Image (cartoon, rainbow, N blue to C red; front, side):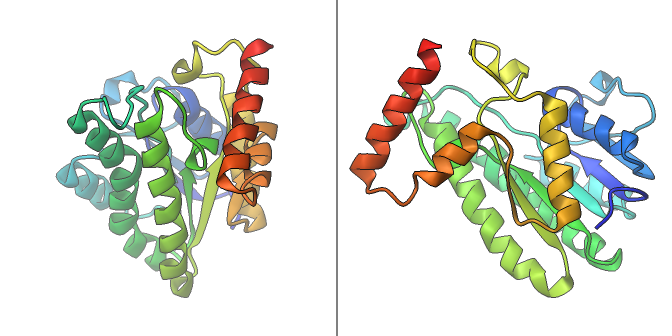
Length: 242
């Protein structure tokens, strides 16, 4: 599909990657951009149409779908990272990451799939992570939620193929946002990530590996688990040493 003249809805559009998606969509000629956030008053981007949205609240998701019946591109960006381990972290926090990063995205897709169908098929972008494929200390819940979101993305892609809806999974390592503020390493800029994802949509790509980190992790997946874990440990050590 073409970004030019599209009608897009971006979740978590008040900052970081979501704000960059909304801005680049406008700059690339989208006819309308719905910018959504749990606190809509925090959306400060001129030219967008602001909607309140909590992707973990079914009534809020339904209200957004009712209000945005002309959408042809859904960008599932909203997400959280709580720094929670699977064995020692509070179970409710683990569930909250899953509810947001996977079930929240799925709820959006379920509500907007009929709209996309009516509007010619369109496309869905799911912002995932290189941590769809590996975990680490302090990131067990995040890894679980992103791995589940990756599997969900692959599943809905098959189910939506018949109605002509493209589903693009976007993986990245670290972007220069508040979530990654504590990492003093090279990061992709939000605008670069948004452009890579939107380029992927226009090319009809099912998957976008937006940076070298995500490309490197994906390339190691054929390794045996022991080899993969050792390779990732070395890569993390090199990353934190720079």
